Length: 100
Image (tube, rainbow, N blue to C red; front, top):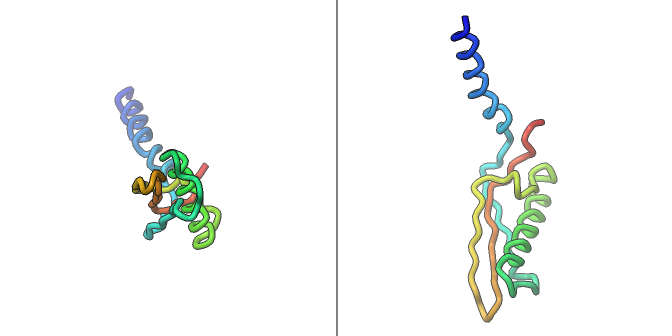
C-alpha cells in the first residue's frame, strides 16, 4: 500500500511541473535593437534597451499578453562595440504568462 502511495506521489510530482510550465509560445522570433537609442556606453544598458525594443515590437504585433521578456523562450543577445558604443539586439520567441 505504501509503495502505491509513494509511486502515485512520484507520478504527480513529475506531472505537476509540466502543468505549471504550460504556456502559449509563438513560433516566430522577434528582434529588438537599441541602435536607435542614444544610450549604449555600457553593454548592460544596451541590452536593457534592446529588451524594451523587443517588448514594443511584440506588443504591437501580438499583444500585451506576450510582451514580457521573462516569459519568452529561446532568448539571446547579439552585441557589438562600434565607436565606443554598444549596439545590442535582443531576440526571442514571445510566450504568454504561465497559468496560475
